[in-house]
Amino acid sequence: MSNKTTQSEKNLYLVGFMGVGKSHFGRLVASELDFQFLDSDHEISKKEKRSIPEIFEKYGEPYFRKLEHSFIESGHPNSGCVVACGGGLAVQGGMMDVLKSKGVVVALFASKEEILERILKNKNRPLLNVENPKEKIENLLEERSPIYLESDVSIATQGRNIQEVSNGIIRSYKKILSRKRA
Image 1 (cartoon, one colour):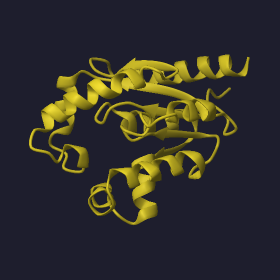
Image 2 (cartoon, rainbow, N blue to C red):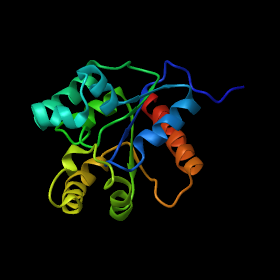
Image 3 (tube, rainbow, N blue to C red):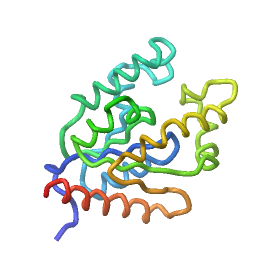
C-alpha cells in the first residue's frame, strides 16, 4: 500500500520568511505526497514574463501583492498542490484566512542569523535591495512573524535534517487535514 496522498486532497501552503526553505521542502513534500509543486513567485514571474525584481522595479510592490492575491484566488488548482508562498504573501490583510480556507497552512521558521546567511548573497530579493539589508530583514521578521504564527502549524527548519523537516510537514498536513474534515 502506497503512503502517497490522492490528488483530490486539499492543497498544502508553505509560508514563512524568505530563506526558511519553503521551495526546497515544498519540492520534497510534493514528491512524497505525489502532489504538484508550485512556487508562487515562479508562477507569477512566468505569467508576467518578468523576474520578480523587474516586476517590483517597473510596477512596484503593491502591484506585485495584487498578483500574489490573484494567484491564490484563482491561479492554481484547488487540490493536489504544495504551494511555496512568497514571504510577503501570507501577511497581506485577510490572506491567511484565504489560505486556510483553501487548504492546510504550514509556517516554516529559522533564526534571524540563519536567514541572513541563506539570503544575503541572493540578489533576486527586491525587498533587500536597500542600504542596510540586515536591518530590513530584522524589521520584516518582527512585523511578519506574528502573522506566520497564525498558520495551522509552525515548524522550525534550522538544526534539523531534511528528512526530519519533510516528515514533520507531511505528518502535520495529514493531521490538520483530518481535523478540518471532522
